[in-house]
Amino acid sequence: MEMIEIEAFVVIAEAGSFTRAATALHVSQPAISRRIELLERELGAPLFERIHSGVRLTDAGAAFLPHARRVLATVRDGAAAVHALETGESGVVTLALVGTLASTGLTVKLRAFREAHPGVRLRLRTARSDEVSVLVRQGDAALGLRYFPDPSASVVSLPVQDEQLVIVCAGHSHLVDLASIEPAALIGIAWIGFPTGTGSSGEPFTRVLEQKLCQVGLDGQEFIAIDSLTAQKRLIEAGFGVGMLPASSVDEELRLGTLHVLPIAALATTVPVLAIHRHGGYISPAAQRLLTAM
Image 1 (cartoon, rainbow, N blue to C red):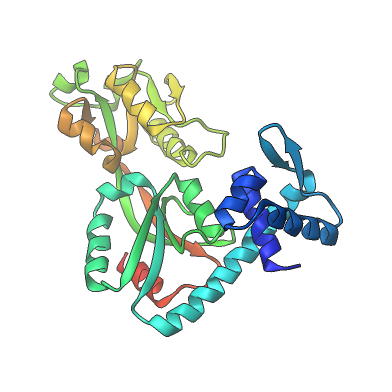
Image 2: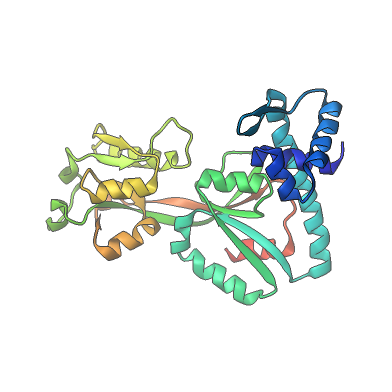
């Protein structure tokens, strides 16, 4: 089994087409088809089936894909290890992070790292928390920044900071004019948050919300489940309810006045922000320094 065969398989699986994969790898389509034929012969099973729009994985292909990705990630780790020995302060560090974290003090730390290590190229990729973990596990990012620990044994989670969650309502809500806000003022008002039972990266936020509402006697309130942070903010702005959101995610709306923070001490809480890296994966000196800086 050759590395070029495994690479061809992964690229085809991601591109969904032999033609697009051949273009990405700068080889001819017959050449990439031959690589897959040899791989299928060695594995003893077809890996793709042709469909009108291209190809899709067979059951055997789907079973082989995560292992193939890990092989490529391990090879990239090895190449990075050799490269780090040769270059020292130079190199590339890819950091995947949840987009809202760019509005926190972590941005200052990233800027300070870049200024202190001008020879290191820092590549940033934004994604949801679960997507950040996927990028790290596959080796597409050396480090990640996400909310809540990753439960997978293949990922190491290190605490970085806690971020405040704030209760927000529409800027035109009658709640804005109240002299003081107690939890009881929210009785009968719907809450907007992430759905549960879906395994999405937003689900832990709803678990925190449910716990806080139970503590102040607001459990049982109407709940509108929306699996999009942006959509949640738009519904809250329109007056459909209130929400508990990361403070960094509502900076722009608070500046524009379309959202308003309700200072309810009994509902004050924070969520953990963690840096993650692949368990057993190689961490270059530059990546290690970035990890320390964060």
